[in-house]
Length: 278
Image (tube, rainbow, N blue to C red; front, top):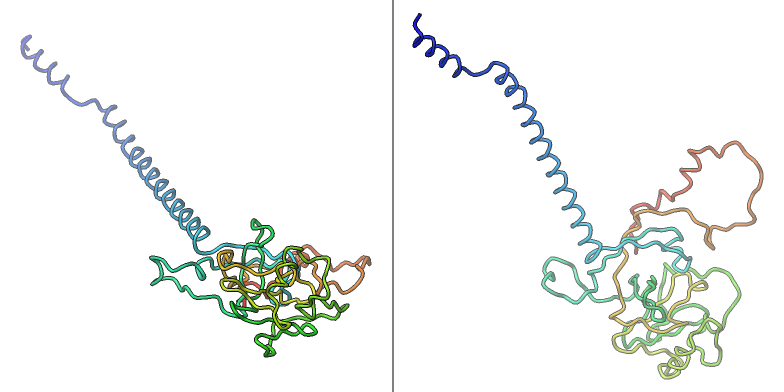
C-alpha cells in the first residue's frame, strides 16, 4: 500500500464521528429537553399563582373585604366570632362598571359597615333605621319612624335594667355616660316635637341588640361618604363567649369526653358557615 493511500485512509478515519461523542450527545439530549420542560412548568405555575394573587388583591381592594365580629351589639343577626364578607361596591358611586355591578341606594333595615364617626380608622357594623328626612323616636325600646311603629323581627330587647336615655330616645331631659358630648349638643338642634330628624346625606343606625349597642343614639349619624359596604355572607364562625351564650359559672368538673376531636368540633359554629346575612 502506498504512502498516498495510507494518508487517504488516515484522512478518512479522522473524518469519522467519535462513537463516545455520539453516545454522550444521545444521553444529554433528553436531559436538556427534560430541564426545558420543567422550566416551562415552573413558569406556568408562577404565572397561575401571580394571576390568582392579582385577582385576590383586586377583589379585596375594590369588591369584597373580610371582617370579624368582636362584640354582641348585632346579636342575634351577627354573633361574636363571625367572619363576614362585605360587598364594597354596592353603595359606591356608579362609574364605568355600573352595567356590570349592582349598585343601589341605602335602604331602611339594611345592615352596613361604615367608618366610626368618632374614630374613622375603626369600622362598625349596624342596621339602618332612619333615612334622610325620616323622623325617629324610640318608646320603651320600640322604634317609630315618621310616627309609625316599625316591625323589627331582627331586633333583640333582652331583659335588663331600664335606661331612659337609651330606651326612650331622643330624651333631652336625660343623658348617659356613654354619650359623646358633641353629639349631645348637636342632637338638641335636630330634635323637633320629640322626634329626631335625620339630615340629608346621613343615616340613623342601631345595633340589633338594642340594650347592648353603642350606636347613633350615643354618637350621631352616619354620613353617606363613610359607608364602606354591605355584609352579605358569614363564611366562618368561631365559637366565642357572648352575652347570649354565657349561662352561668364555668363547670370545673373533670370529665373524659373532651377528646381532641370533640374540642376541634366545638371550636367553630359549623351551622353558621355560608350563612346569608339579612
